[in-house]
Length: 59
Image 1: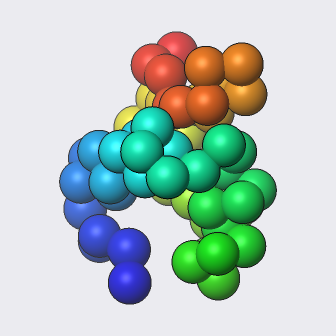
Image 2: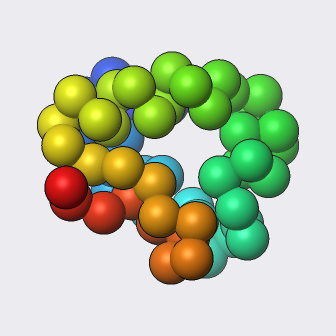
């Protein structure tokens, strides 16, 4: 289950990407979560996914 707070979600997702997953796609597949939902939630707090860095960055 993902954190409900978007800032906690940001921290959680970036930690998982850093420590366990080589892409957002693999994280979403493994956790059975919607990539678009995660991206929309984090975009609402001005963060987007950077594939090269494999993390969400502030826009």
